[in-house]
Image 1 (cartoon, helix red, strand yellow):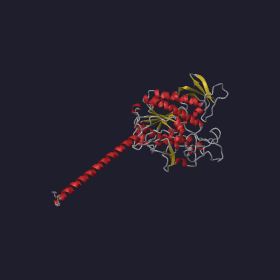
Image 2 (cartoon, helix red, strand yellow; image 1 turned 90 degrees about the vertical axis):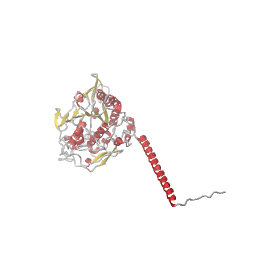
Image 3 (cartoon, one colour; image 1 turned 120 degrees about the vertical axis):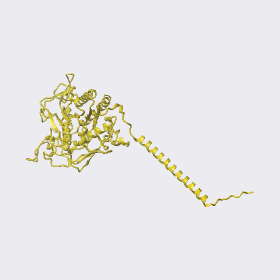
Length: 461
């Protein structure tokens, strides 16, 4: 006997079953959505872990003196600089492990502030020769009558990130009760004048010291108790120099490769920050001394000395300087600025060389001179050796790599306008050109943007 299958057609029963089915469907959809979100977050998390650069070993780095920062300029520095071979092989790949300013927000990216381009910038310079009274006469291109002004309207633009403009108010607030020093030759003095001019927008510095020749100076910012110095020591070593203000020598320089210039070493313990640089003076004729004995020379024809070359002396000098810095016991924040290329064409400074260009080079349009390559390589190699040693002793040593970006600015020099109105009487008159130092305002102002970014990065390591 076959049992009859009955289908309940009661409306109330149908409604109940339909309600149960809807509940089940909604629950299934919600469960699926939750699973998808979970999987998506897991994938994104694992992806960010893979792409984020390795963290810097915080045990090897001490905290630098405080500097307030903004979200747009905080990041970390690379644990190690590249080898000179890597940099020579591909200039555009310098510092490949640089962590971006966004790293503190867990955004994985790489940023090298020293690789980029000069891009047009319509905004006016931060100062003029009218608003700043610290510009040395030789760099005051506006006052001296330079007719073009296009060189003022460019800014350095890293390719992988934004480089914030130098903020003078934030800088001074952060440097309260601190001391800075620029230690080196006349390029260091050129740089400190640039910084003074930018800071003058917030507070005028008071000059409290100068040496007899006005080459070394010190300024004080009373409202912030901030001290800024420039210490003129062209070799960073003990040297006896016999030349006048125009660079004319009466005898060979006597250079002691194993003795530091006490002009700066005796003050070093007073500086919280220092920017140290050397370079061009090592190309001059010099007799080299070690252990109080003449060991050789550079370009000394007619003398019965071994030609050791400027590269030997420069490497020896940097070794001596960096050994002092990393073993002095003074835990300062130190920048080693790399060599500054000149742009003399059709001769040198003493043989009629000029620099008449009015726009930057693009990357690939100019090559470094052999002497600049040699100096830059020595700087990178000696820095790589010294930085880990400094980190172990609590000294923060960073490379301020200004060489490449400066090479692209042949338009930023005074040229003939190192003198006041040189062509007023005769437009064809022959004058000495300055194709090494920088007009103020000018490209050297961007070096301060780099400094502030590097300080911000150093603090947030």
